[in-house]
Length: 74
Image (tube, rainbow, N blue to C red; front, side, top):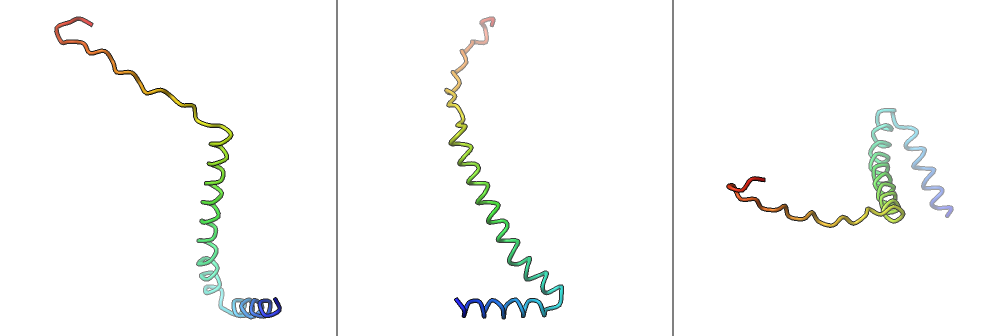
């Protein structure tokens, strides 16, 4: 665990010493995909929960309308 902590401290120091535009670009390259992935995961979990607790009722298919011949009044 100590080795990981030292590595992480090195990464933080390297990132803190970069100019701001590079910091911003790196953070966006990591956080944007991670945020989108978490948002999709939350969306799927909520959809599953909503479907489980409030299922959509089954609707029978519509019946075929009666066929009326052209010469017969409707």
